[in-house]
Length: 264
Image (cartoon, rainbow, N blue to C red; front, side, top):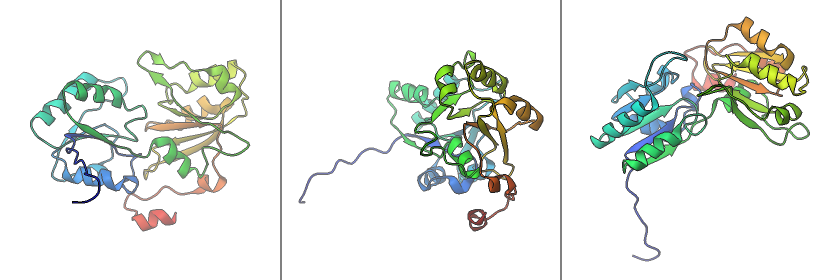
C-alpha cells in the first residue's frame, strides 16, 4: 500500500441529530440515513410525525415535555441514552432544529464522555434560518446589520436577561422561546431606548403546513402576539421585516410534494 496510512475511526454509539424545523424536506441526507438505521430514537416533543416516519424500524421514545408540564428531566434523558447505548443499540437522540442551539447538547455530551460512550453530531437547520427563509428576509444585510444574535426569551431561572442596552442600539436578533417573554423583551428593549418602530417578524411553526407569519413592530409586538394566540414553536426576528409577498403566501398543504414545495 502506498501513501499515508488511514486511520479508521470507530462508529459512534450515539448520534445527536438535528431534525430541523419540522419539514422533512429540510432534513439533511445524513440525518435521514441515521434515522433509517436507528434501533431507538429518543426525540423531543416538537419533532414532526413526518420525520419520525423516516425511522420505521426504530423504537420511538418521546423524551420532551410541554412548557410548564411534567416530563423527562435532562438527567433522565442522559441516563436513558447511556443505558440504550450500553445495550449495543444504535441510538439517535433527535432534537428539533439544531442540537447545538438551545438544545442542551453540552449536557448530553458531558454525560456520554463521562460514561465512555462515543458519539457524533449531525447538525440541522435551526428555526431562525427556516423562519427567515419563509419570510423571504435575509438575516444579515449590508448597511443594516453586520451581526446577528441568537437569544432565548427564557432560561432555567425564568425570563432571560440580556445585554438590553447593546441590543436596543443594534436591534438584530433571533429570539427563541419568546412567546411568554414577548412583553418582557419588548419592555426591556424600550426602556433601554429601542425605537418602537423597529420592525419585527414573528414566525410560528416555521416550515410546517400550519406556519403563520406576523409582521409587526417592537411597539406592537406583545399585543399582536397575544391577539394571534400563538401556541406552536415561535421565533421572533427582531429588526427584520418580511417581504410583502411572503405575507401573501398561502400555507403549504400537508401533502405537498417536494417539487410543489420548491415551487412556492
